Image (tube, rainbow, N blue to C red; front, top):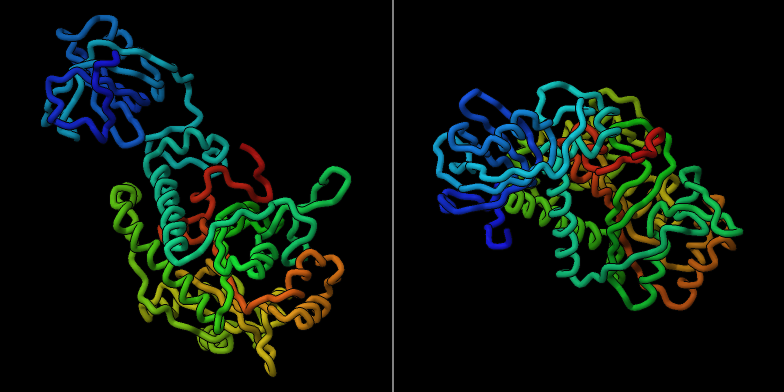
Length: 438
């Protein structure tokens, strides 16, 4: 066995003709045609055709193939043969077949059947759902996206950090915190690493980023909201303005999308996804202008109102007509922004921004208030007790440089890049208001 070449659908080629090989995977389909039987063996990379002519194949192998349940795990030892009929140009004639794990019947859902399956059924049996190549392709692309983010930030002098996910207070306050018991105390699941990454700006680690889980107790049943997601956060010190932060995000998103196009050609073809590199630099739309743009399209909205999902979608349609998939909306009303965002003096606005992608916000950020007295005043203005944030505020008392940062929802980014209908399609095991298992 150890001397036999182990092959996958990716590595088995016509060059292996007449060699003895081992292949293994899931029995996707079996066809018994009297004088010959075919097994479509699926592995991570594709399909291997196992061809068993009755006159040349051991009877015990023919018996196995005659009764083999679909989706069973099988190992086959045989001889590779060049074949014009096999899609890959090579097939395997079995000399030994081992059923490693027989699948029960009936299956909870089909893998290759052209039948629509309800989302609940799919997510309840996610292990089976993810056997579909087009669904696995999403997560292979997601893995590439995370790797590309990491490389871009490290190349630009950032240090990767990991902050607590069990916290004593929320970064944004409000009702979107998951509360839990922490020994004899009350704690929360972190909404973001916001407070910690800002504290790090006072340490000399002037560029940090984190890719990790974030939690929001939002009871929203939409295609863009979930309770647990992967957030890509960054913070950078000694900035001149929020524009420095925007340039960093723009460079990163462009690099990631370009990398996906170059490195994930196979997965994109499996998905049938056509990913285009957005035009850069991304257009910048002040909040006031964004409001006027959607009002001109018939939306009822006033200055100070949140654009909301409807406004974002409408603005996305306007920008799409101009050939722009990515664009900035900046200088939102300070009243709508968290305490740590810097106010724009003499105006009701703030040094803040959103990055929208095809009509949906994927990132939010801005310049932070680094001046201690003003930060405390911002907290009090928002109805927060500064004494509850002593651990955070202390970092601002002893030399805090001007800084800014962002948070970017990785799954939202992937959802829009691949035009997925629901953010849950980019999450292995989604968590929302009603789903806690599997």
